[in-house]
Length: 235
Image (cartoon, rainbow, N blue to C red; front, side, top):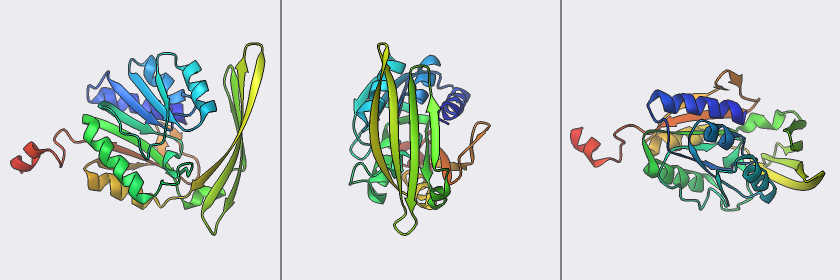
């Protein structure tokens, strides 16, 4: 999914002649999206709260800039795009993650994204609780196993994640438990629109359908944004 999102983001950026520059990725995970963007000629910066994922990202994208942190307090630097793929806004690692924190992040992103730049993201909606209970993915030197449980009363989804990362001739095993608060996608669309983005809802990244209960968003910063004084004067 991250690879398909990367290809769509690259296509959309090139369409508006943003063929280089920095792409910022909160919740970068193992660096799949960052790797694709780096190969396409973009500089990449990723943040994540998982040390195991950051280690894989640094190994996968040696020219990337990867840091430990949460989107709740992260202030994106000037960039052409922000990508938050894989339910980044649902995670409750940071107890300060709530609707207000998400809205404030969109405000900060809007201020730093270049005109015609993009924000691409997705959220796990209420139907995500019905997703498959076990998933498995692997690369040349890593593997990730995910087991999922959900509580329909609290709308909390719990994932137990086991990662295997090659270190020399051996593999290092790490285990983490992730908790997600399922979110009404109307909240996300409303926040994106209200801060000035022109947003659309996605059911696919490129030709790849999004998993059940996952809703995507592609939001563009207008060339003259609502918060731009020139735009207001022209109006």
